[in-house]
Length: 360
Image (tube, rainbow, N blue to C red; front, top):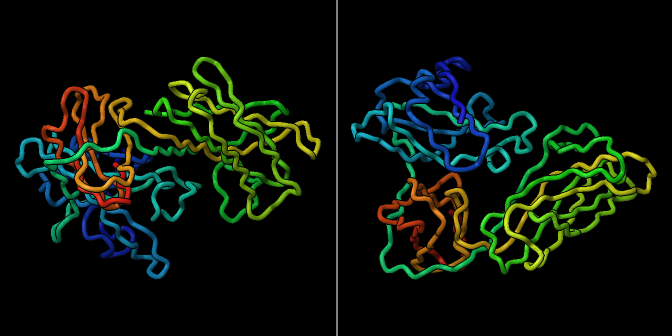
């Protein structure tokens, strides 16, 4: 995260803020650790009581425009020497969301900022939110060997003035290219079970011209597999922007291990122009995944299993680990992993309700 300098009380309106606050800017969704050393170098008060740290999101409320809605974000504190003081060597972590993943963000299309801004303060009263702790469960039964994985890769990088819609987003613009030109996007497929098919969806946008395209998938060996063609839409449509979605499933025997490359190629169109502009919005993957970590990390779900369940995840290097239940991203829970790592295998236990998937 990026840390800003304190915002003094009364800067916006006298009495609006009760204490100094620090901006914590986050661009990626995931577990975010904020070390005390970084805060201290940004002017955070040395020696603050660690149990007084409070993290919030502020959301615009049209009914009270000068008084934002406060959403308190639970944090997990790590007091290195257990002295109760937030000093060098200490840190806290929380589950951060980029604007696109944050259901409370007022501008989820990221037209004005790629960052989600969290506010940190040292409060004098009240009880700041903390993550509840999930302790190891005895007598747990082994969980499933695979789980349904879904991954969304957002590819919109360039603002498009030609998409006439009130909710214009940002789109990757392969602009003014000759028919036959190709844009390529590398997509990781972590942990795919070797017997699992791979479903791939590519979503593009269409403005005032028909935008046809072809999608191919390049494997690690260089082998190319046709995913399909999308003809675009005729006649052109202005409002709302037309979404062109191409989905297909590749059988397990043609999908190679490792990353894939999604190749989007401009194809001839009915308007007869020799140039075109495919607006590639996102790439989505769906497949069955093994409980195997990639680069000491994994995102998995309980696969709607019920009871007291143990999930065994392999592939860890032995470095210190953090595990969170983020089923509700605004109310995450922290797992006590004492004794949970053996060799390269981490065993996470949880008490689950059948038919409801929890996300970790």
